[in-house]
Every structure is written in C-alpha cells, then in structure tokens.
Image (cartoon, rainbow, N blue to C red):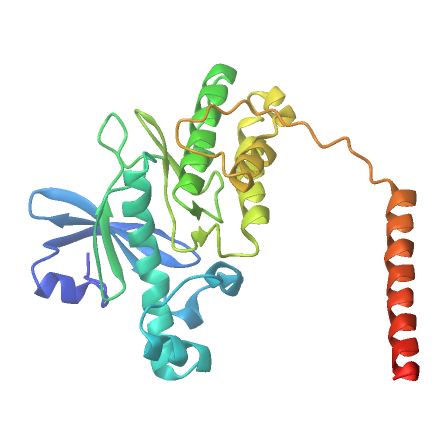
Length: 285
C-alpha cells in the first residue's frame, strides 16, 4: 500500500521496510501493520491534537510532570512551541507506560520506540499468527470469563502498584491472544498519586471490565474490586503480591451528629472566652 506521510521518515531511516496494511483508525491514532526486517510489527500513528476526538485530554494530563522548566512554561501558555511539547508528552506517555507496565508484570505490547509521533511496537497475534482480536469480538464460557476477569483485575492492581491507572480501559482496549488478555492503548494513562480523578478513573476501568465479563458470568457484578484495590492503595498496603478477594465491607460507622455539634459548641464557647479575656486585659491595660 501507499506509505502514509507520517511513516515515510521511518522508511527513509530504515526503521520500517514496508507498510503492509492499515489495521485500524481510532479516536487518537491510526495503526498500520509494517515489516521491519524479518519482523512484522505495528506502527501507531498519533493524530494531531486538532484531529483527535479524545475530548477529556485535560483530565488525563493532570499531574504529568515536565522536567524542563522552559517546556513547562510554554505548555502552560499554550504557545505553538508549548502545544508541540504537549504533543510530545502525550505521545511519550504511552511508551513510558508500556515499559513501566511490562516491568510490573502486566501483559502489554512490547514497544520499540516512538519516532516523530509514530510508535513502533509488537503486533499481538493469536495462535494462528493472525492479528489478535479485541475482547469485544470474543465469546467465552462462564469459566473463561471468571478466569480472564481475575487476570485483568490482577493487571489493574499491578498498574496501580506501578503508580499508573489506564484511564480508558474497556473491552475495546484489550486484545486476546492464546495466553489471555493483553492491555493496549495507554497514551492517557494517569499518575495515580498526582491526578485528582485517579480514584474515579480506576473505578470506571474496573467497572467497565467487570460489566463486560459479567455478560458471561453474572455473579461478577457482585464483586467490589475497585473499592478493595483503592482502599489498599490509600492505606499503603497495596503491593504486587497482595491477593485480591473482590470483597469490600463499607464502613458501618455512623457519624454521631450530636457529639460533633457539642464539640463545635465547646470550641465556639472557648473562643468566646478567649476574646473576652483579651478584651478585659486591654481595658485593664
């Protein structure tokens, strides 16, 4: 096929030898199957900011650090240079996340580098060597659904242990090969400790996946993985080896409103007394 304009520099530099076909076009990128020497890989070409349909980008960028102060200032001002730098940060976020999560024991495509807005990475295939299907195109038994759901919850846990939340996890961002689920599409991955939307995003990721697998195993709807994982995270007790149960007991403690009001009244009375003593001291002075 005709070489896309954005991939041409990689061909010129010998990083890509042939563009075989377009695999898909999504809200933030187009993906092509390419040949690099003897290897078949995929090239993810990120769309420019004004052509992306990913509307909540600001929520996902919150908390991302830029070490270079000049770049950070330019990004804040929204200058042309700043917008270019913001795009680089957006694109490099996926590469960084892929390396981080692979090291954390999460199955993701192996990255080979990002070059001028084109990410080269492993092409995930099934047991016949064909492109692995997305989860939404796969049917399964109840037993398989329970097994794969547990695997995905383990990956969500390991992501959070590594300080990341996918942020857009669904049946459309999971591939299924002969070994099970593979997590993809990570440019919007968020810093769990720095993003104010982190807990909400984690819950949405977990609930999306649970709802999907529950089509085959309805009992999964009774699980509470999002609350369990976040509670462990907030308590500083989340680590890769912690065993998840999917159970979580809400606090049954009910605020004693009368006691709280009494405490407020006591503090108010004490403050009034303090002011009265100050007034009397001023008068004597």
